[in-house]
Amino acid sequence: MSPITRRGFIHDYAAVGLTITAVPRFAFGQVLTSNGVVQISAEMATAEALQILGTPRQIVPFTTRDPTFDLTRAYNVEDHVHAVRVARGESPVGRKIGFTNRKTWDEFGVREPIWGFVYNTTLSQAHDGHATASIGVFPERRIEPEIVLHFKSAPPVTQDEDAILDSIDWIAHGFEIVQSPFPAWKFKVADTIAVNGLHALLIVGERVPVASIADCRERLRTFRVALKNDGNVAAEGSGANVLGSPLLALGHLTGMLARLPEFPPVAAGETVTTGTLTPPMPIKPGETWSTELAGIDLPGLTITFAT
Image 1 (tube, one colour):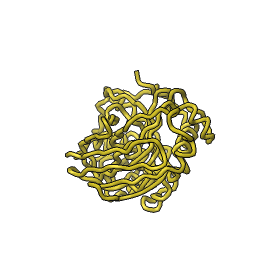
Image 2 (cartoon, helix red, strand yellow):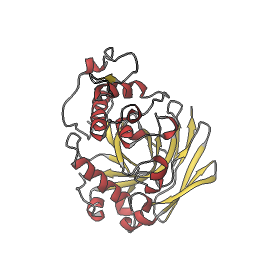
Image 3 (cartoon, rainbow, N blue to C red):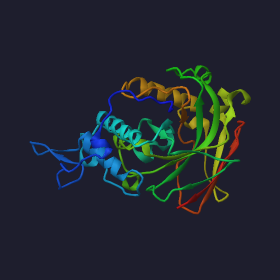
Image 4 (cartoon, rainbow, N blue to C red):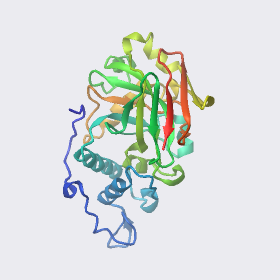
């Protein structure tokens, strides 16, 4: 059974078929109101998000077409899409936190972190430090080296790193593959929330028990990572880049979820990836990417991409 039990209401959407024939023909996903203002309803945005899910299709950002498309509507869309994915048979197994690296905020025009669900269909485990992944269906994909946390108990809503660490049984280094269904990575935060935080895949490396990592709290802040493309260093970063520490990034997530009662809090058994340690780098099939970590007892990871 999935560790995540969804709160709130379940949407039928015609047995998950999502009837969208009522959408005006002038622009898929838009509704013309009585006063002539074009708005994108949560239902229409849900239909559009589901239609592009798992395809290389891109769309004009919701906020470009409808400046009133805000965080409330975006979370409503995320909630609806999640319900449909679960009804289709996907199991949520954790979360991803995005935009925790403040050094990337100017590039993407954001000023706050986001989060999304990780599913059994998007999570995989590397073997002996190596993995392969097919990325052909993901538009404008990028690689993000991250720290992955697994919880033996529900983490407290706090910024106390030691209290958070007490709820974790193992830590791993991993790669999140992100995508942009919006051309040229141009969007606003609400757009990214509506498409599950741009999440595509999560590849988890060797699971290391917290108890075996000496001075774990401090090392998570100070360790360094080099991200390499075919052996050449493409980007560098550190644990401090993700809101000061991966543990503080998790604290931010629990705080966000506490303010969103329609979504369940992080529970025992969940896997949470905490955000990119380096700038996210474009990737393409045929490339092999790898990492070297220094200052923490976590091994690096190597991944080769296929179509």
